[in-house]
Length: 191
Image (cartoon, rainbow, N blue to C red):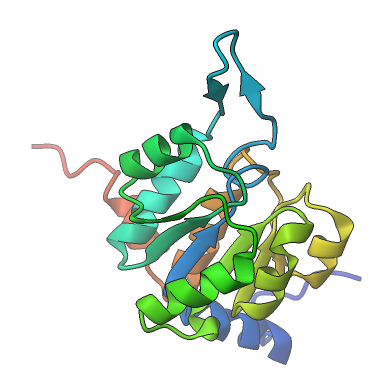
């Protein structure tokens, strides 16, 4: 089956998805397997280490510049997550969460947002309830099969490899502000 030509109207499901993407006000993220590749390392002193993708970080900053909120909801607790969240000005951080859906509900109530205004990006079964309940549920490319099947969107990139940036680009394109975000980084006219 060939891709539709640019002049063809979008299908009703594509139009609905774009409308839902435009309505997102908060982007909620798991950490291990989403902001990282899912590997957890400790050094000889028992200090946990994680690797974060730099483009995900810029994506989160672009999302914030467009007026979007970002939050972290993770089952593990780690000092490095606090450090990374601080670096990206993410003020909503819930670590050591055993019931992610309840944590998301509390965040939404605190910020007076509806489930339909939230996007959740996950990679494994503990994220399933949130992916299914949010206005936009996202699975990273290397998420477990059950999460990919339940998600509204599945990224092309794997966790810790730019998946969050991909989601942010999609959200900003739906809002019609991606090009303006890019222009901030283009050189002005030569003098």
